[in-house]
Amino acid sequence: MEVRKAVLPVAGWGTRFLPATKAMPKEMFPIIDKPVIQFIVEECLSAGIENIVFVTGRHKRPIEHHFDINTDLEKHLEQCGKIELLKNIREISRLINPIYIRQKEQLGLGHAVLVSEPVVGKEPFVVCLGDVIIKDEENVLKKMIEIYSRFGKSVIAVFEVEPRDVSKYGIISGKLIEDNIYIVDDLIEKPKPEEAPSRLAIVGRYLFTPKIFEKLKVTPPGKGGEVQLTDAMKLLLEEEAIYAIKIDSSVYDTGTPIGYIQTVLEFALQREELKDELVKFMKNLIIEPSEV
Ligand code: UTP
Image 1 (cartoon, rainbow, N blue to C red):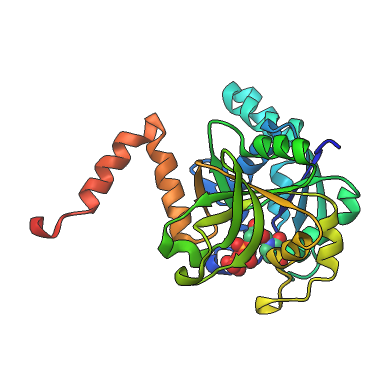
Image 2 (tube, protein in one colour; image 1 turned 135 degrees about the vertical axis):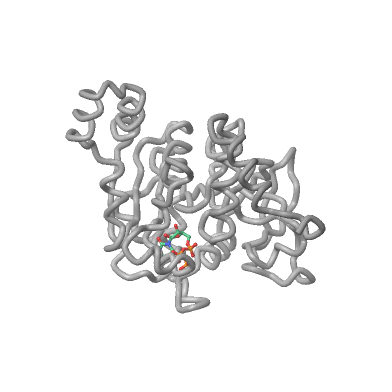
């Protein structure tokens, strides 16, 4: 069955960015001039998925406005002759079919995915975390869809992290079955480095069979009273295989202040018009102790 829908959970509080996230979703934070969530929507589009299911909350209206058509702004840009900008803001609104569904209470990522069930139905679907940008020459979702079409089972993307970082992620243990493809044996949420079965961390891209909904419904709340997606995946593993694809892509977690700053800096350094001035500024800012 074809993968036609992507679920983007964007309803979280974003407490790590308060007070900035009191009224502004962290998924709308700009990476220079493009909000984080637009990178993720573009990734879905380039994998051939245009039905984007946003699981939102009451303070997330700017996301809806962003993907809507803004005729006043379009007219203004047209009148000013700013054709490049016009093309830029027009394209994304017209390419996607956005579907918004409310998570009425922030009961965790697993719960947010479950909220999308009436829209997704009995189809395979992808889930992309709303604050993780992935940059790769080859689209990761596309690779995951290829694996799904071969095995007909759920697929998650993983990447190798430093041993000291395993405690920040869900870690898999698995058997390598072919180049970069694993069959998952177990999933451990944020293990201590000495207890981690591998350094393969779940990266925020999932492709699920609809069976995950059954499992989410019976997943008891875990840490912080939240329904954890990893717990539901463990239940799914008891019944169905889960495959993992190891990616070598650059992964940007914009959901933490340091991750966000690093992302902005790295993307700015890749922009010709910003690079030189930024490097000069940073060099002046960071004065070696010996030079003070
Ligand atoms: P995070 O745990 O990074 O987001 O969830 P958060 O809860 O908003 O952030 P903090 O921990 O308070 O700083 C990853 C993604 O899942 C969504 C978030 O919006 C984010 O994009 N999410 C999380 C939901 O949609 N609903 C939830 O109940 C929790």
